[in-house]
Length: 112
Image 1 (cartoon, one colour):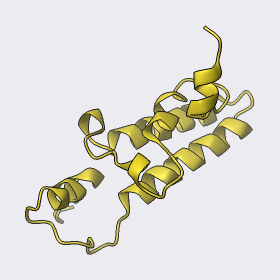
Image 2 (tube, one colour; image 1 turned 90 degrees about the horizontal axis):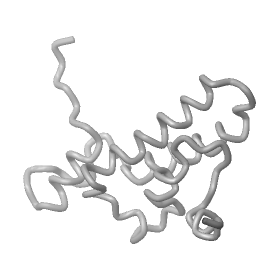
Image 3 (cartoon, one colour; image 1 turned 135 degrees about the vertical axis):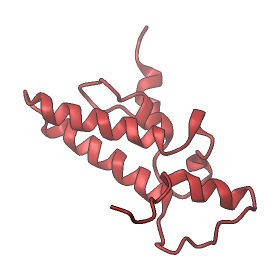
């Protein structure tokens, strides 16, 4: 495996917004926000079908966790709220280790 290692997803996006050496669009046409959206949608679906299967629940949690990770340290490349993508980094954060998917609005309305 002596090939060139691809940087983590936000690396090229970060280089682009900082006006350094990255090309845009990316040569592989990777869409960071589309990728994060797909992870959140997949996790949300897994939460519906999880039942008693802990491996499915773990997969959903891993996807939510990765969705937050690829948006950079402390969400440094999280511009989802300014994009047309209908997901937020909060959708991922508030649903890690949950058993039922909650939108941010639903989470905000919870008592306590």
